[in-house]
Length: 310
Image (cartoon, rainbow, N blue to C red):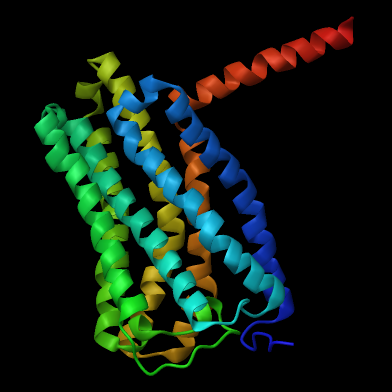
C-alpha cells in the first residue's frame, strides 16, 4: 500500500474533495451548455465579444476533465496513482498550462472589454481584429504551452518525486529560484493584476461617463452587458487571487517556508474553485445564452403544470 500524504489530514483532504465535486458538477454542466450554445447558434459565434468567453469555458472544461479529476483522486487516496515520474510531469504540465491559459485569456478579455466599450473603432476591421484579438490569443497560448513544455517536461534537475504531495511536490520550475520567480510574477500574477486593475479602471471610467454613454441607449445596453460579464469574473479573481498574490510575494521575498506551505496547500487550491465559477458566471451574466435556456425550461414547466391540472 502506498504512503499517504503526511502534510494534510484525512479530514482536510476529504473537505477539499467535497468542494471540488460541489463546484465541478455545475461548472461542467454550464461549460457544456455554453459551448453547445455557441456551436448550435451561429449568431453567438458572430458576437465578437463572446468568442473569448467560449474559449475560456473550453479551457476550464478541459481542466476539469484532465486535471481536476486527478486532484480528486489524490485527495480521495492521499497519494498519486499511477506512481510514475512521467505521470507526475503530465499532471503538473496540464495543471500549469490550463491555469496559465485561463489567466491570460481573462487578461486579454479584460483589455478587449475596455477597447470595445471606449474605443470600438480599434476592433472593427478584420485586420484590427486579427492584430488585437486573434494574434494575442494565439501568441499567449503558444508561449504558455512551449514555456511549460520546456520547464516541466524537457528540462531536468535533481529533485525527488513525492507521490504523497499534490502535483508530486516540487519540480525544476519550483526549485530553481530565478525560474520560479519569473513564472510566478510574469506568467501568473502579471495577468491576474491586469484583470483586477483593468476591471477597476473600466468600472470607474464607466461610472464617471455613464450619463454620456446613456444617451445612446442601444450602445449603453450592449456595453453594460459586457461590463457586467467582466466584473463577475473580476470579482471572483479578486476574492481568490489577491490573498494568494499577497502571501506568495511575502513568502518569496522573505523566504518564509511556513507561509509558502500555506500558500501551496490551501490558497492555490482555491484557484481551482474560482476557475470553475467562471462558466457559471458566464451563463448567469450572458443574456444571449441564458435567455435560450429559460425558453427551453419554461415550456416544460408550463406543460407539466397543465398535465397536473388535468
